[in-house]
Amino acid sequence: MRSGHAGGNDRQPWLCMVAMERQQVIPLAQYPEVTRESFLQDIYPLRKPVKLKGIDLGPCLTKWTVDYLCQASGSKEVKVHVSAVPQMDFLSKNFVYRTLPFDVFIRRAAEAKHTEYFISEDEKYYLRSLGEDPRTEIADLRKQFPVLADDIQIPEYFEKEQFFSTVFRISSAGLQLWTHYDVMDNFLIQVTGKKKVVLYSPRDAPYLYLSGTKSEVLNVDKPDLKKYPLFVKARRYECQLKAGDVLFIPALWFHNVTSEEFGVGVNVFWKHLPSNCYDKTDTYGNKDLAAASRAVQILDRALKTLEELPEEYRDFYGRRMVLRIQEKTYSINYE
Image (cartoon, rainbow, N blue to C red; front, side, top):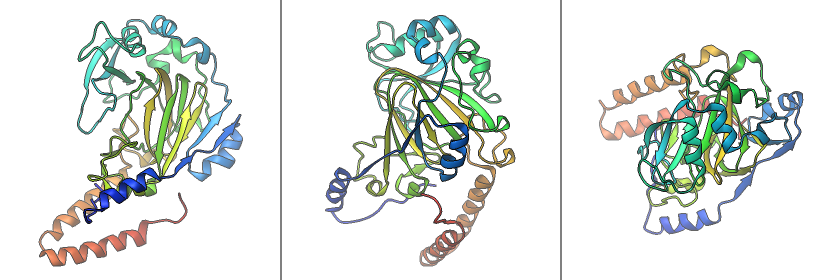
C-alpha cells in the first residue's frame, strides 16, 4: 500500500524545503570487536541497525583485489544491472539486465570509462548475485563462488538453521540503489571500497511513499518535496561503511545505499522468525511474510466492499478502519 500525499497551500513546498535543510541526521551507534554473545545479548534484542567494527572476516580484506577476483571466478557468467544514470530505480526500471563473464564485469565495474559498453561509456554496473535458478534457489557463495567463499569468514551471530543466503553486492563507484526493506535480518559486510548507507525506521513507513517493498523517493538527498511533502517527517539514520565494517540491518528497516567507490560487499541473511512465517517461494528474502500477505489481501477485499457505499460513508468507515488498525497493531515498543 502506498502512503497518501499531503495537501496544503502554495507555501508548503517552501516550508518543506526549509525543514529538509534542517533535517537531523542521526548517526548509527557503532561497536568495536563485538562477540557473538554480546551481540545476541546486548544489541540484537533492541532491533536497531548498528555498525560493527573489528570482526575477523578472514583474508578477503587483503586478497579481493580486482585482479584476484577476476582470476578466482573467471568466466562464470553473471546477470548484472546496467544503468546510464547513477541513481538506479527499480520501480521505473531505468536500467537493463545484461549477462557478462564475471571477470569482464569486475573490470568494467572497477573503471570509470569503458571502451566496451552497452549504453554509454560511463554506464554503471551492479551485481546482486543469484542462485543457479533464481526462481527456486537462493544465492549462496559456497555454491556459486566456492573459491571466494573460502576467503571470507561470515560472522555467524545466529543459529545455523536460521541461515538463509549469502549475496554478493558489487557496484560501480557512484551508484545509488533504491530505498527498500527486506523481511529478514542481515549483515552487510563491506569487504572493499566505501559505501554511504541511509536508513529509515519501519515506524516512518507512512512518510516514504511505498510501492510494495520500495520507496518512490529515489533521491533521498534532494527529494522532490512538491511530489513527496511527507518525506521530511522521516527520520534519517546514516553511516559510512569502510572495508572491514559490518552493518546490522534488522528486518523491515528501509535502507538506501550509495557506493562511494567501486566496492565488494557480502550480505548474509537469516530468519529472525520461525521458517513457516516466510513465503516458501521467496528466494530473495524480500517477499512479505505469509500472514502479512494474507492480511493485505483481506484488506483489499474490505476496501473493495466499501466501494458499494457513497463517498461520505466510505470516508467515515475508512477512518474507523484506520483507527481499528492502529488500536490493534501499533506498538510503543519499537523505534
